[in-house]
Image (cartoon, rainbow, N blue to C red; front, side):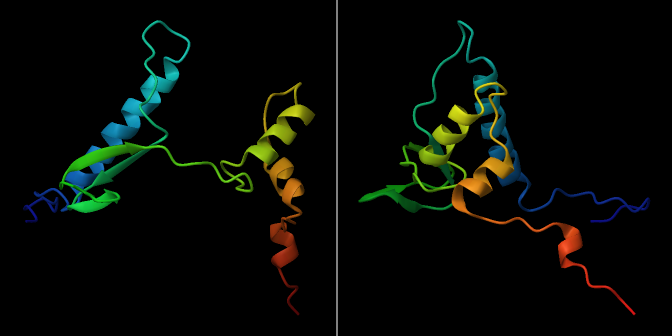
Length: 124
């Protein structure tokens, strides 16, 4: 599989799966970039599950291999990523800049971030 000049002449085994996921991510990103245009179409749900084998994604239904299913997954109000409580609190406190910082999230949950210097020990 390695040519005379040392390059690999074959594609990695997971290449097909990587391309499929990358194509879906690109499509979703492009749709988000068009949100305020006449071309925007909302996504069918908030989560895309892609299967490379037959799998039961929806109870009682087997999703065939190489297919995808859109599903809505409820937000966890306490989640640092998708939680509504912290997001709403941070948005109210930061109406000027419109952003939520890592500090806003950690303070909202009482999490203390350590600096790299906090983890270093002095040598002798």
